[in-house]
Length: 295
Length: 298
Image (tube, rainbow over all chains, first blue to last red; front, side):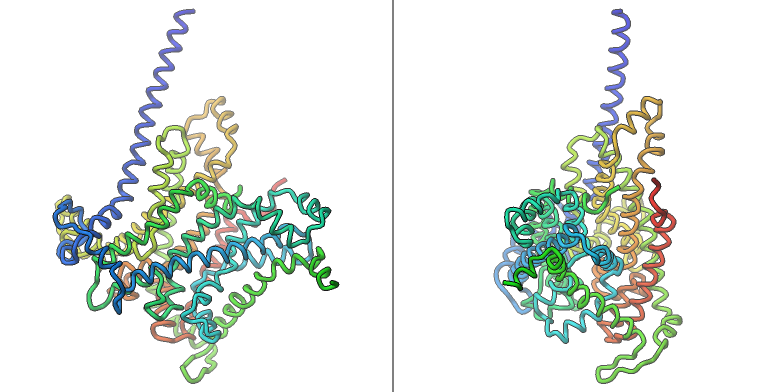
C-alpha cells in the first residue's frame, strides 16, 4: 500500500514537472512575441523625445543615449497652432467627432436591432437580409458616389458628412440583435400590461438590460471612429477641421517629413484608446467575440 | 390622440424602429451602389457626362497598371490568409490552455498594434524599413552579415514589409476571435477523448479543428475583404499613393488614384465594380466550399 502511494507520488511529480516546463515554455513564447510586438512602439516612443535631425541621421533605432532626449517635440506640438500644425485642434476634433459618432451610432443601431428582434412582422426577415447585404459590399466601392453625394448635399467639410453614412453599421446592428435575441420577450408584455408605450419599453425597460452590449460596442466603435481615416480624409478640407490621423498624415509632405513631430504626435494619439482599452479590456474581449462568432 | 395610438400599435412601432436603417440603406447604400454602376458606363468630365457603354471595362482589360494592382491585392490577400489564420489559431490554443501565466497582459500587448491607427503603424514600419543603414531592418541584416538594402524600393522586400505590417497588426485581433471560438467548445468532448486515450495532437485534430469551423469561416471572410480592399497600409508605407513601379499599388489605391487624384469618376467606378465582383465571387466560392449553404443537419 505504502509502495503504491509512493509510485503515485512519483508519477504526480513527473506530471507536474512536465507541466511546469511546458508552462514556462509557452509563457516565454508569449513573452517573446509581445517583445517583438512592442519593439516598434518602443523605438517610436524613444524617438519621439529626440530632435528631428537625429531622426534624419539615424532613423528609428534602439538608441538608448538619453542625453539627446528632451520634451521639445511635445512642447512644440501643444504650444499652439501654426498654418500647417494645429495639433491641439486635431486632437479636439478627433475627441468631439469620436464621442458624437459613438453616441449616435450606438443609439441608432440599438433602435434598429430592437425593431428587428422584438416584433414579428412580415418584412422582418427581409430587412435583416438587407442589413447583412450591406456587409457584403466593401465601403471603398461606394466611396466615390458617396463623395459626390456629399458634395451635392453640401456636407463636405462637416462632421455630419463623416458620421451619417456610417450611422447604421451592419456589424453593430448584428451584434445588438445577437445580444437581444437572448433576452426574455416576456418583459415586453409585462411592460405593456403596466401601460408603457412601445417606445417606453424600448428605452426604459430593454435599454438598461442591454448595457453590457452597449459597453462592448462603445469600445469597438470608439476605436473605429478614433482611427478612421480614409473617409474623413475626403470629407474634411480645412486643416483646422482635420482629425488626428489626417492631420498627422499631412506632416508627411513631399518637401520633407517632420518625423519628429509626427512621431511625438502619433505616440500621444494612441494614449486615449490605449487607456480606454486597458480600463475596459474585459468588456472588449467579450464585445469582439460574442457578437461575431456563434458556433 | 388617434395618431398617438397609431404609432404606438405593435404593427407600426417596429417600422418606426427600423426606419433609420431603411433611410440610411436607401440614401447611403442603394443610391451610391446604383450610381457607381451607372457611372461605370459613362465618361465623366467636369462639364458633361457621356454614355460610353462598355468602353471603361474594355480599357480596364488592357490597363497594365490595373493588372498590377489586382496582382498586388491578390498577393496580399493570399499571404495574409496563409499567415493570419493558422498562426493566431495556434497562439489561441496555447493561450487557452492552463499553461500560460499572465494571460491578460499578453492579450493586451498583442492587441496593442490594432489600437494604433494606420498612420502610426504605417509610419513606424516605414521608418523601420527605411534605407538608412541604421534602420532596424538594416541593422538586423548587418547582424546576419549582409549589406543594408532599400527595403521599400524592391518588390520582394517591399511585399515582405507589407505582410509583416499586416501580421503585426492583426495577429492579436484574430487570436481573440479564436479564443472566443475555443470558449464555445464544450469541455466534455476533451474529457471524453482523454478517457479514450487521445493525445494532445489527436484532440486538436479531431475536436478543436472541426469545432472551430465557424470561427475559421468568419476570420476567412473578414480576411478576404480586408485583403482585397487594403489601401491605407500601402498609402502610409510609401507616404502617398505612388510607389516605385507601382509595387505597392492596390485595387483600392488605383480606384483612389483614378477617382480622387485624377477625377476620372467613370473609370474609377468600373475599377470599383470589378473589385465588388471579385469579392463576391471569392466569398461565394468560399461559403460553398465550407458548406454554409447546405441545410443544417438535424
